[in-house]
Image (tube, rainbow, N blue to C red; front, side, top):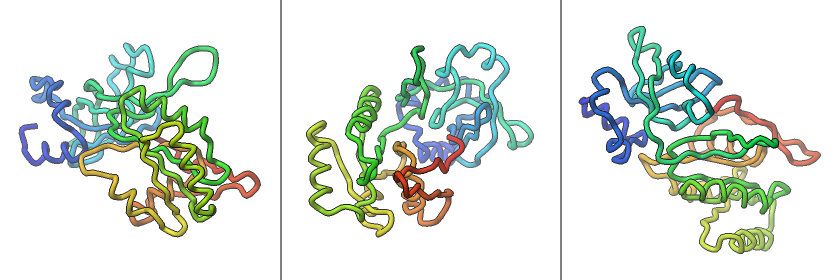
Length: 248
């Protein structure tokens, strides 16, 4: 990992000074630093700054893991060993996290669902139609602020509302948190997308949260500039959407 180009590529993925400070450099002769970019149950995809590689945990990790916190989540930095000429890898440890986004699961037993790690900014997305829900927004804000992550609210489907109705809803949000940044946009008319693009800075990590049907996948495709992710139509009856993503 002394290769400057590889180090630069890792920094482009978000590997900053804090991670360098927590790193045991003696392990770099044996392992590679990589970031978890997707999770498929007990399988992972990691990026080492140059390639994306399939990965699994060591048997020791699986045996010693006592809770969800012991497993890698999207955004984690890990130490991994490459095999089969770089086509496959084994994750040996997780580097200390600077933030961990999680939420309580339903039920009497207190348990958590881990969403993502090492997030700088969370984009909380609601649509301005029937999906708009202040109580749900408050729950998201509590979850984000508990972990010292910067929140930004995105309100989609502005083409369905009058300017007065939009203003009223933004005012209600600012009654909860006066200084909260709120951005209005429309995927359909492509209004406000440039403002959202300008929110995104290189070498930073963002997480997009929101209910199904608010337009998260369409927003991602619009920001990328092509249809990378599959979208699904919302139901006309109640305006609710169906999950288009089957992995983290």
